Image 1 (cartoon, rainbow, N blue to C red):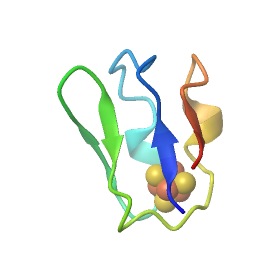
Image 2 (cartoon, rainbow, N blue to C red; image 1 turned 180 degrees about the horizontal axis):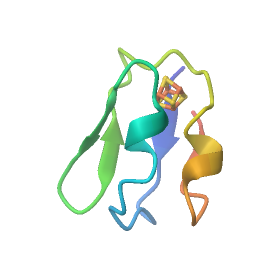
Image 3 (cartoon, rainbow, N blue to C red; image 1 turned 30 degrees about the horizontal axis):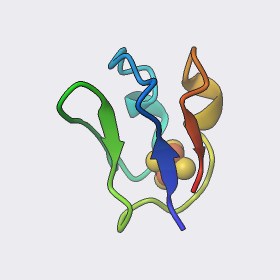
Image 4 (cartoon, helix red, strand yellow; image 1 turned 135 degrees about the vertical axis):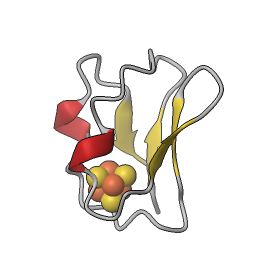
Length: 56
Ligand code: SF4
């Protein structure tokens, strides 16, 4: 189960740099986590200033 970025995402990009497998990319209106690549490490969760990332 991969982590998920909710629709609350404001596309600030704060989470991108901390992902060890570089599976977070900019989508349309929000950032998106590649579910097949995410290793569920949780590193991105604390980086989001609005708490939009959660375990799937
Ligand atoms: Fe990347 Fe870890 Fe967040 Fe998955 S949980 S998107 S591997 S930082």
